[in-house]
Length: 89
Image (cartoon, rainbow, N blue to C red; front, side, top):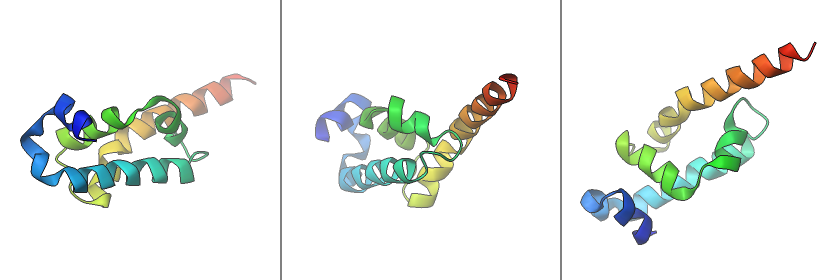
């Protein structure tokens, strides 16, 4: 995980354990909600370093903040999936 932190920046090195826990929380949440909206895209397309980068950019320090960081991204994918589903008919 430290290597991932180095790619994004070590300014938050003191919180690396907390950040890595948030990354895992997002991954677990996405897996549990795979069929809900756009969370499947997070599971299938996002790597740990991508999740870490977004959490760091948004200064997420809690589980709620971590999920909030993904709210808009997941909503966009959910809309695109709904549009694709509706255009089948």
